[in-house]
Length: 422
Image (cartoon, rainbow, N blue to C red; front, side, top):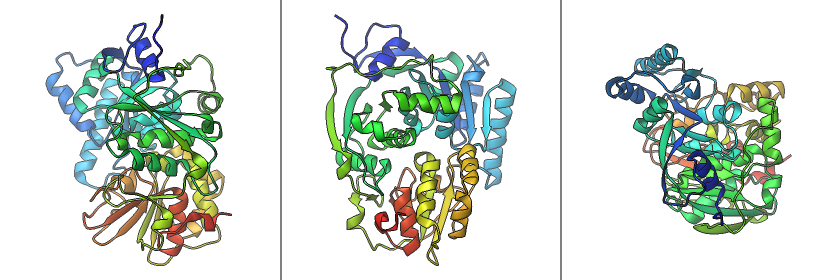
């Protein structure tokens, strides 16, 4: 009898030409896409030049270089890193995205398909699991090996299942859901596991919502995250790629073995605020209202999509950001930026007093734009809030949703966004 498998196990079994795999198995699999960005690509290039004898890539058109962390360059050293990437990509026929957006957004917009194996030299690669793929971050050495051989090794992860029911209340977002989940299980609660999001609530969640859930899984220590493909997935793929057929749509077998299962009624989720210094410091906005802020940021691979800009613009329309507070927006990709322009969102945001930045990692990365100084208090839709992440170690970072960030910047203090909903 064929063993019952999780969705992740099915993908890895098929890729490794096995009838089945189980958690803990060590396997060797071909990869469909490998990606790296300017945070570490120069390290990978050095490893390639020093350690690889046969200077050839398995398939340059399955390798993606993205300049997104420090673009435009803020220093001579960064410019040198970017030029090194451009030169290597050009000489080897590698796909290069130079300022087109954040790497994980570009992967889901342009490349990833259900059932594929994706590895990248960035921890938030698990974002792509929302399309029903196995997607995981790796180190620079493993990336180079994959780029050269077209394969990688993996230990099949255990799976945690998160069964989602109910519907989100107005002003509550998928960002609030995943922050609550991480707060519950802890920043190490899913270490080297797959986080599988399932349940009837997904019917009411867009692909953007699903990307948000999968993206932050690594902040609980997860190796990967995944959502079973459905009609919403197919519609997204049709809109982005012009097709929805020919993909491998998989889901977990009923009765398969999970390490643990969790149930969440989304109607009971409240707007979240997390921080400072750790995602373990979860709280609801109601308990943090009134704390002063000096800067807000809406963007990153977690919350820089068109839905986030729409939400913020609906709150900021005909309102002004409080004096002495800065609010910065960075769309997740060039496509998101163009869509926001067509919808008039950029005009609304600018009229509120916000600043619009080019598509890049920006304030979330804390190295080239919107760096905060001593005593600053940032409320952000970025991915991390540890000390010094966005600038000075003598500053404070709170993580929250686009709605909470926008509303808080109007008052200059953390507030519940529900009062500002149109």
